[in-house]
Image (cartoon, rainbow over all chains, first blue to last red; front, side, top):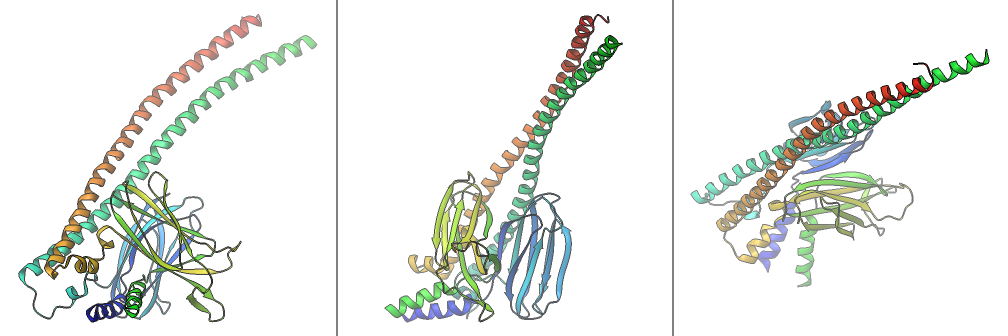
Length: 209
Length: 214
C-alpha cells in the first residue's frame, strides 16, 4: 500500500516533466493557429513540421521564446526541423500561419519533442546499480526501434502528400475533360447559330429593299 | 482506502498534457490521425477558461464540458460523447485510415464570448499503453517489462508497414486511373471534335440548300 503511494508521489513529480506532442490539424485559409508549451531552462527541444495537403504545400512558422525573442521565423516552408536549447524557463509559442493563402486550407503535421523520452516505468529511469548486458541491449533495441518509428512517420507523411496530390489530379482530369467536351459542343452549336443569323438577317434586309 | 483512491485519482489527473492552444467557446477544432487498424488511441485533455477577474486561465467553475466526436475513415462516427472539463478519451480503430478527432466545448453561448485554453495530448499505439499497470497486473520484472515494450513496438511497426503496403496500392490505383482517364478522354474529345465539325458542315450544307444559295 505504501509502495503504491510512493509510486504515486514519484509519478506526480515525474509527470510534471513536459514531453511535447505530435498533432495533425487542418489550418483554414487566412488563419493562424498557435500552440504553447512550457519548456524548462537548459532543456533541448525540437520542432518539426510538414505540410501534408493544400495549395503549394507551404506554411509560415514563427517560434517565440518566453521573453518575446523570436527564435525561428520562416515563410512558405514545406518541411523543416528546428532544434533549440531553452534559454529561459517558460511558455514557448509556435504559430503556424496560412494568412497568405486566399482559398486553400492546409493540413499541417508537427512534432514537438521536449527533453528526453520519458521511461515507461519510473524505476527504468533511475538505476542504482549498473545495467546488465541484457538491459543495455534492450535499451539499444528500444532506441533503434524509435528511430524506425520516426522514419516510418516521415515515410507516411511523404506518401500521404503524394497520394493527396495524385487523387486531386485524378479528379481534376475528369472535371476538366467533361468541361472541355461540353465547351466544344456548345461552341460548335453557337457557331452554327451565329452563322445562320448572318444569313437570315441579310435575306430580310434584301427583301425590305 | 479512500485516501488511497483519492491519491491514485490525483496521480491520474496530474498526468495531463502541457501542450496547449486556445479556441473560442463555440469553436470546433479537429485533429487527424492516420493509423492502421486495431490500434488504440488515447487522448488526454484539460480545459481552462479565461477568468477576467484574475486575468488568467483558471479551471472551469461553470458546467463546461468537452464534446468529443471521432469519425473513422468512412466518415462514420465511432465516438460522440461529452466529457467533463478534464479527462481522457480512448478508442480502438477497426479500419485503417484517417480518423478525425473533433473537440468543441458544449457551452450554450450563441457567440464567442470567451477563449478557452485546451491542453491536449494524443497517444497512439504503443505510446498509449500504461506500462505501470501492465507491470502491476502481470507482475513482470524490469527486464520482462522492457521486452514487453519492445514487442509492442515491433507489433506497431508491423501494423504500420501493412498499412503502408495498402496505401501504396491505393496510390498506384489512383495513378493508373489517371493514366486511363487521360487516354480515354483525349480520344473521346478528339471524336467529339470531329463529330461536331462534321455535324456543322452537314447542317450548313442543308441550310444553304434550303435557302437556295447553293
